Amino acid sequence: EAFAALPDGTVENLLKPENRDQLVAILTYHVVSGSIMSSDLLSTASAGTVNGRDLAIGLRVGNANVIQADIEASNGVIHVIDSVLLPPSDH
Figure 1 (cartoon, rainbow, N blue to C red):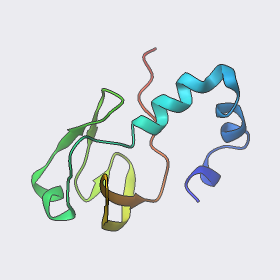
Figure 2 (figure 1 turned 30 degrees about the vertical axis):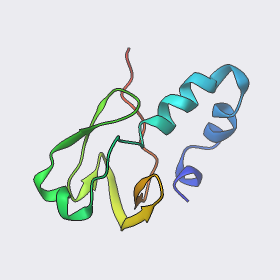
Figure 3 (figure 1 turned 90 degrees about the vertical axis):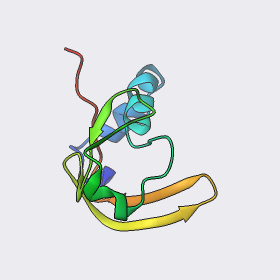
Figure 4 (figure 1 turned 60 degrees about the horizontal axis):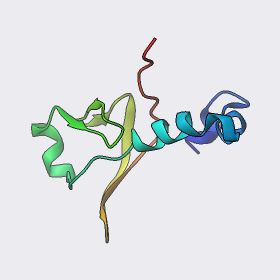
């Protein structure tokens, strides 16, 4: 649903081979090393993403609302958000 909310043509454009780096940057902007549980969200102001950039977190993650929290997986914890996070532009 979050990807569907992006402007028309965005996903198709990101899936083009020449835009692979941009897609990887977006996807890795959604991942942090370690586990941050929802109980940690109020005491944690930001987290470093696999992308290399910091992301503000709390009751929201960046500009997204957490709609489901603390889904434990074999490789970490998932918090479902309601939109796609786009890393800041370097321009």
